[in-house]
Length: 280
Image (tube, rainbow, N blue to C red; front, side, top):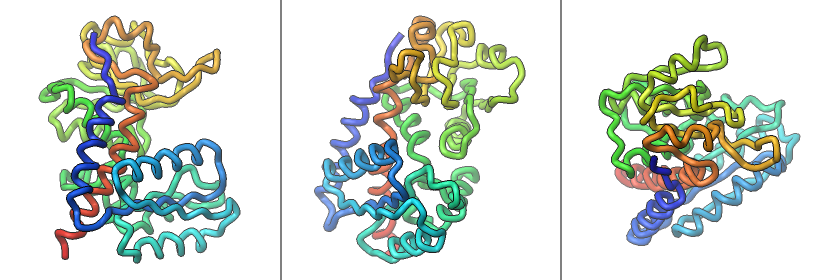
């Protein structure tokens, strides 16, 4: 059993990105729109801005009050779309409940959609064209690539069908020639399905959901969860202590997929910057 070290892979990639940025004629820029003051969102945004600084990118933080109108948020996005110094834009989720997330995200210029959330970028992914991919699934694929894990012809199960993780991850695995099954809360006989899989990816937000009797010997397990156990300790959707001994590879929580998400965000920003200058 090998534990996949997301921290080490993320650090390596950030070093490579920093070298690439240093060779550019100008700085790529990432803008974050933060509506309200949700404590978890504050931490995530701080990490994103810190990552930009670490690799030599510019960052822009647009703070808006929690009671901001749809039009006020839309105007902020429009200004960032028009700003030539901004190559990537993300709207930090979740938004306050009175705001329509999908409608606001679709206002982001697709060329600057570094979180892969606009309908156009999703459509490009699902039709097999070059796209900016949601950062967490992108990070999962980079981890598999780094560890030279063969995907061709493998049976993969993705538990979770969210637009941010489950759906794009399933598509990326299909693009890599896996045979993919997507499971969810209405799936019957889930254990029977997961036991047939060479790769099991879990992204449902339920602490220690995947147990040892749900995976076959030698399977690879990717844990995208970020939960708290009964003692308040950080854990994933996989019962690591139970499942790890059966695995060929497994991602831990923390230190697995998590560090890759912000890293792929700055990688996407670099890619968006390069594409911007290619079009000129």
